[in-house]
Image (cartoon, rainbow, N blue to C red; front, top):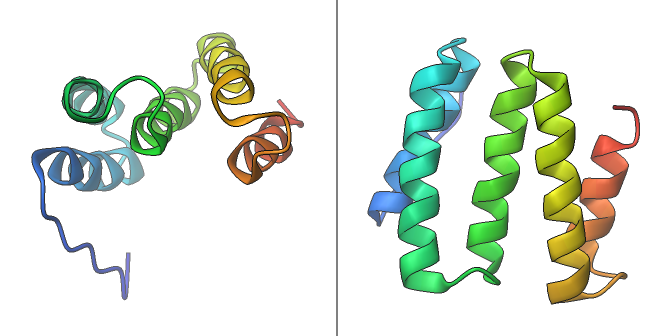
Length: 105
């Protein structure tokens, strides 16, 4: 993580920063705890359709994949993809990036 700087301003940001560190260190269970906390905060503050909530859900799927549970990660990505298409449209840059990222799974 050389050169990585994360400036945090909210509890959700702190949880995401913690997740990134823990996931990169292979501490997937602890990362998941922080991600779930971040998701709860995002749902309360921003709602189900916010970009931040979608980013947190993607981070949860990423962590699941890094932890080796490919079937669950595929399911998480698929649900996220459907929700993003519904909420942001089929040509959303975030949706297209997610599809590109998950195409090889």
